[in-house]
Length: 143
Image 1 (cartoon, rainbow, N blue to C red):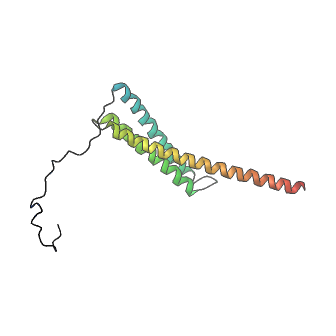
Image 2: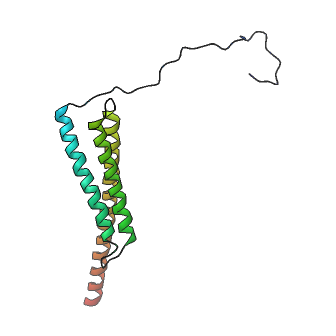
Image 3: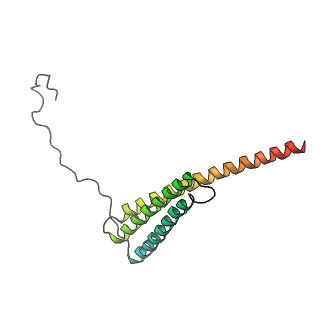
């Protein structure tokens, strides 16, 4: 309704009321004891791997090839794994939210895998460049 327009006598005075629908709730699912046991074990090992990643990143600061980038990458992957572990633990310890917690854990796992794939592709590109450079130097020496 525009306050600067004169009222329209043909327009309904009261807004039409529509019944309110409850917000969408995804169907809830609860894993059984056997599934919870597997998920709990996965949560534990994911936490251990996350801590190892962080410690490995910290160790990169003290070795010969000191690298802040290594620290950042390892800590990021470690934190993502720890968050995934916490989500998996929530699957086991809470009621009614198993699927959302599981999806959060899978999202974090996916991010860790993406980081690993990017690092592997980057390392492969560097290796190919190094091999080409070595072959070029050897060819130049041979002539």
